[in-house]
Each structure stands twice: as structure tokens, then as C-alpha cells.
Length: 88
Image (cartoon, rainbow, N blue to C red; front, side, top):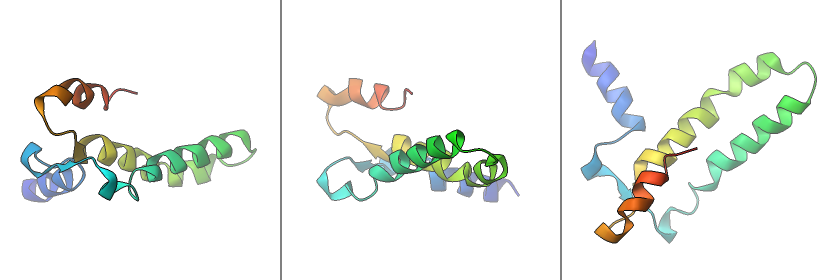
């Protein structure tokens, strides 16, 4: 049972050696969290969307986690950027 939980955790937050560098080849994956957060903000302004927001909530949550932990800046001069990219 623990191996399933661990593999699900590592699917969203990979090990540091498996992180990908954040460069121009990753551009299709970067706007997804922002678009989903904008859509959630739009839904929060509309009446009677509580159930829809609760059902859609995992998409922006896990996409933001993936963007924060799946990509990294390479090089010691970018260590500060690696720390502050996970801050809200």
C-alpha cells in the first residue's frame, strides 16, 4: 500500500535528480496552472458554482504543485530562484 502512495507522490513531486530544467522547451506546460487559477477565480465570481469549484479544485492545485516541483533552474547562481518559485 505504501508503494502506491509513494508512487502517486512522486508522480506529482519528482526526486531532485529527476526534475527537468525550466527552459523554452517547457513552455506548453507553464501556462496551465495560471489558466486554471484564472478560471477558478472566474467561477468564484459566479453564483451557484460551489459544487463545480469543488470538483475542479484538484486540477489547479496539482498543476501548481507540478509546476513548482517538476521544474528547476540549473546552476548555482539560480539557487535563489529555485527557493522562491514555490512561494505563493
